[in-house]
Length: 144
Ligand SMILES: [Zn+2]
View 1 (tube, rainbow, N blue to C red):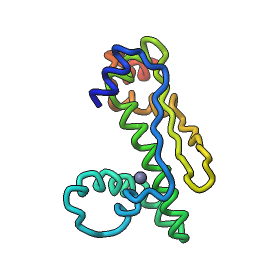
View 2 (tube, rainbow, N blue to C red; view 1 turned 90 degrees about the horizontal axis):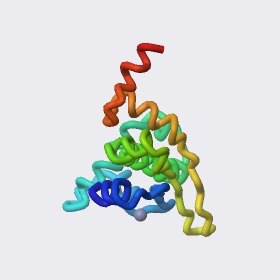
View 3 (spheres, rainbow, N blue to C red; view 1 turned 30 degrees about the vertical axis):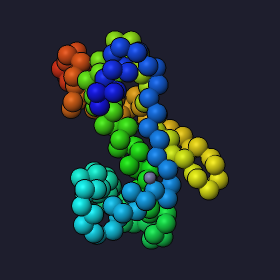
View 4 (cartoon, rainbow, N blue to C red; view 1 turned 180 degrees about the vertical axis):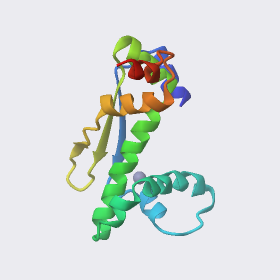
């Protein structure tokens, strides 16, 4: 997160890409119940993503399709975590960047898939709850 802070505040990066990959061993491990020691905190984050999207994921019968969908949802949630940072919110409101992108790499086909996350929509949603811009977005909304 301090890397993001530095890149946004001092280097003024215009794009941030969160890239996952299908068939990720980390995501697969998170889908199985096992005590994996030092990996537990990291796997817990992915299990949190499963919990948030449990309805959708449990409805997918085919295990590999469910696994791939969790990879995509994990990218989306990590994008949200980036958008939540004060540096990203404040810079975007002030300067119009950085834009956050969620991609998934498919190792079998070599394709890089843009998940086309709704950056503006997510940012707007986030600012209603996590507003760190000091612009009083919640208040503004009441005035409309
Ligand atoms: Zn992986």
